[in-house]
Image (cartoon, rainbow, N blue to C red; front, side, top):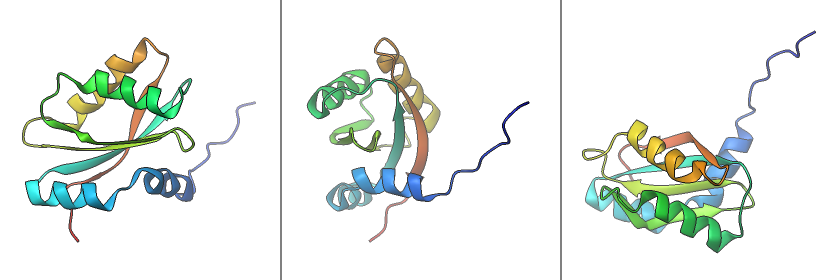
Amino acid sequence: MAAPAALACGYCVEDSIAAVYDHAVIGKARERQHQVAFFALTGPMLAGHESRRLIARALASERAVDLASLRVSVDSASLSLAYDGTRISQERLSGALNRGLAAHGMRVSLLKVIERPTR
């Protein structure tokens, strides 16, 4: 017998986003007309600085990503970053992250994108 499908309550997603939300990053993204993406992380987590370094390495060749904006929360297994949506699609961004993290057994899934950050 299969288990019934479950729907996410929404609170978990909002908590994950809140853990990596940075008002200053949103402000800079707004000034640059960039987007801000929030991702869930799955797989074995490393210590905070190690996870951030690993994720930054996965994105190093993507010039459309503002690496200084990268925020990682090991506790909530989430990350956020600002990027230039005119230079990289959400799909390509997710793919670059997943390719770079695959060797470490980690994966991302998109939670939310703020297309045009506002105050």
